[in-house]
Amino acid sequence: MGWLWPESNFKKARWSPNSAIHGLRKFLGGCSSSLSANYVSLEDGYYRLSPTVQVWTDVDEFDERYEKGRRLEKDRCHEDSYRLLMKCYARLGLRGRTLDLFRICEKILGQEYGMSPSSETQYLYIGILRDQSA
Image (cartoon, rainbow, N blue to C red; front, side, top):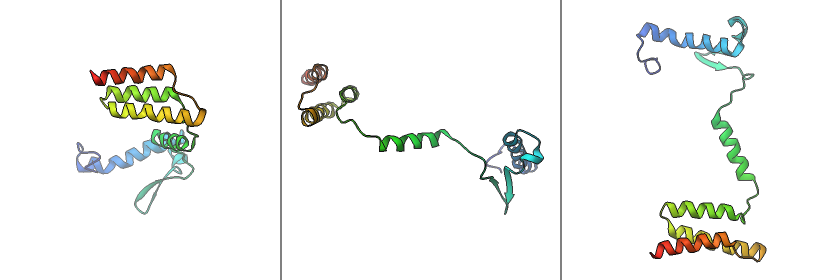
């Protein structure tokens, strides 16, 4: 209790969890505390949320979207993504990675479609090469 309510004296800190739970019960129930008591219970000295209470956090949403992204088909030929990454690497001063990325893009486009990177991607690559030699 001292960790959660360090500014309170012992007696106040002792009542703070009860006050917080009362507020939580009212919030969850949206009605009188006697009806919302079912949402938060005290069992074996521990407060527990009822399984009927659905809790959502942005972390849960992030994890869900991350997993969904890991399962989505990857477009290895998306040149806009290669250019964006090349620019990011170049700004970070990682020119070697930038040039390697262009070569990967070039290889994949050749394998998948039998074509070279677009002129926009090639100009970016040449510009990065020039900056490196300067």
